Length: 454
Image (cartoon, rainbow, N blue to C red; front, side, top):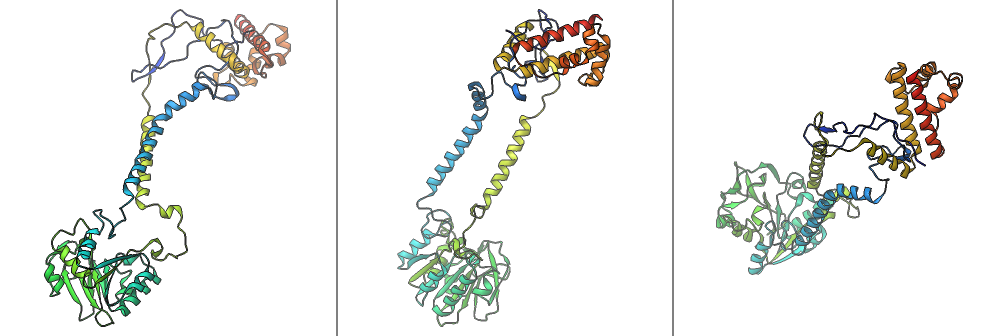
């Protein structure tokens, strides 16, 4: 048994030119559906809505063809994502191992400080790396130099421990680029006076270490001022020093404020007199305690507090995600652009409209889409009847407007007296089986012929 397809224009040997975009790329247009052609079983047509209100692509939803099409559309994104993940893993693997971070005496990276550590070791100075303020304060003594690489990151408890070590140890404490955040607790006699924009500066003071080293890269960071009369102020930038040596409360001890840590980096140690100045500042005692604050030493953080995932993500990743979002939005706009008005082109091969009709009918029948087939048949019939009886196209699908006009054109008493029969034909429910669908198509054809001839 065969099921009907939507009636359409009469079959022609040469189909109408298909609709394409103005870019010149041909696109398939729906072929006209001839009226009175044999009707096949219901199914889902290519590009037409499928059963249960879904839209088909020529195959049922979830079929291997649909999955292959979805994979072809998504494989470019999947491949790019795989390449990015592989690159990230490779970079992480290459970056692991001997890489320890900025100002780390174990790191040979350009921003590490392994070079100065090895030079100090050659001069007989031992270097010990600590990661907590408690370890740093316990290791400080008259024969040690305590280097604090990032004093501004320390919390109140950590700064208090370092301050006690400065006052009681009798050794030297070197603070790298301390600002107004940490100076009140670690060096209350000093204050910052803005930034030093000139990187390479002359000593400008009688301090033996500065005179011996000569010109050095102490700028690019902070400048200082002090109220201590016995302080040594060196390497001035705009009348304010970038290197300040303050005496401590214990005899023999002092505190060195270095406005920039650049001269301790591997990539800058060989410039100017950086190596000489670094060795004299850090090698005046036999032992060097190199304090690299750990994550729990961050200012205001409790030792037992765990960070959230967003707090652990570096700041640069936020900008990276924003750039990726903008790039994705631009790509979406580019792919969704309109291609201009429709134009017509001739098909390279003439396809009979009846063949298209039969193929669509087979798809309807294969999918069992009687609801879709019946709704298409009724909608097409209502539109044609509305044009025949003078009902506006906007009211063609309104029973209160269409049914009276159609009934007035009928001569058959069955339609004239039985409005219910006409309502069932044009606005009825889904046929129960294929036979009922074929009967519905016959009724619609008969009704249209009667209206045309009346």
